[in-house]
Image (cartoon, helix red, strand yellow):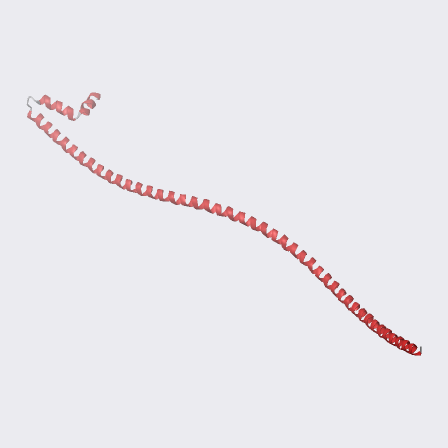
Length: 185
């Protein structure tokens, strides 16, 4: 029994040592657990700070994005307005171009008409000169013929032949207004 007792004592010592070792190990584990908990809490606090920072940055970015979208909408509106003005200007330019081309065509037609009128005027001036020359020639010939007829009438009157009456008739034919002027006197 004594041996058993000693053996038991020995087992109790071993158990006490084991228990002390376990307590020591448990105490170390608790201390490590407390340290790791503190570290995790510290990291959690840092993460929460970072999360708040990121949330603030996200809110700021969203605000900036909203401002950019508003600016973009305003720019799109201005772009549409400018585009409409450009289209109207382009249409106006096309109309002006057509009117300009029509004016050039009209100017060319007027120039052609002017040149035609100038040519016709020159032709008519030449015809007037020719007709005036012909008239003057005919008037000269008429005067010469008139003088010849008057000379013949005078010779016949001087001859005093029986054809004197014919000479008077010829003279009346040559000067029909002379007898009428005598009758009015």
